[in-house]
Image: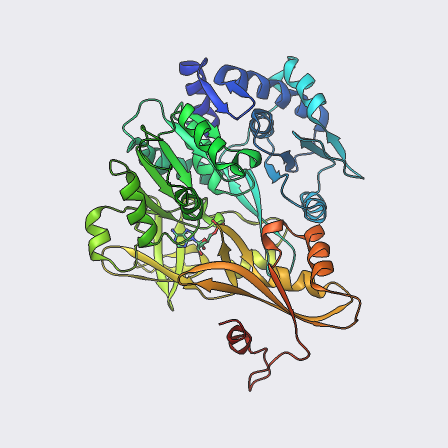
Length: 492
Ligand code: AMP
């Protein structure tokens, strides 16, 4: 198909073959090799998997090999499902079983019983060897292109299915945003792991515009000095992260325009951008632009944007999330933001019930029936911009990570020693600082430490509550529900 995502990348390959496509602290790959290696692996997948068109789990972290695997899967006609090394074993097993494919591509070492894991060494060999590509047909149109798992309130993650058409709809717009850097060669910052859909903004906008993706791996992110040096050496000019990450960088006074002289544009998504963060950032980077974008994984990364200029900062108490991109409509229904348009996911993988609950049919202003996604976000429209004011449910964002509190509660209650559990966010002003779990235990053997370490086996580290408080009885409301407000009062 002309202008498919793969075609767009191929055009870049033809034009800028020798340009570095992906750079990490220890490795890099140019567009020509990225294309060739993914062709080789795609052909191998086609021969090896034959009629099996199920999505393929791709495990790893920030490496060129990981991206080669993504492209290979879609070139071979299969969706990929990225899983980062930060996932604990139980989650990896759950996702692998939910994806349901025997073959797993692993750019980092992984042992998983019951699956055929193609590890880094074997991948390297396959990628180096030419195979016949004529047997594969790439993913296109309404085929699923990637699948990202997000926290689910029942304690099991849900796979969001994004099609090739969805991704194209998103890229038509994200490329326009990136053009605001005014640069011909954009060096994009990649902060988010590839299993978080924010990374799609930097990865694919970069690969379809001939940019260089500058990836911060886990090790670099744990050493601010080294990380800043790496950003500087690679002259990043387009920043893509959650506001939390920029706030963390700003805790170091060296993070400013003298360090990153070429910084043109900050693109934020994933959580609330506060006025305070935007103001502080302008003090550090007076010449850069700041854009706030908003959207859920279920609608392909982001669907609204607004440039947070000085006028908005002066006039608005709450920063807007902006206006919808072309191809998207936003509706406010009973105070909730609903999204319709070309980037709406196909649904949740193998989960028709959850899909039907969240993707509904509504009438647009002309009375025509259209499909819309219920975001669960509370919001309003002031005649010019949309605003997001919080959640209707128990989903939260902690340091940019999407978490269903019910996911943690269900996993806690899965331990036989725990009878009841409620998890609450502890805030400091507008920001959620950490999570606190209130636990009613059954035995005497458990303590906070043992619970935390058991939970770490099941959930990513960012979902493990910092504090565990034991209580004898959960406070109840008049209508028999757990009184979360009363529990909250315990730590305020
Ligand atoms: P995720 O699927 O991880 O991208 O999380 C989506 C959720 O993050 C949204 O439904 C919102 O609750 C929140 N979110 C994303 N972007 C913004 C933003 N710019 N301002 C406020 N909340 C946001």
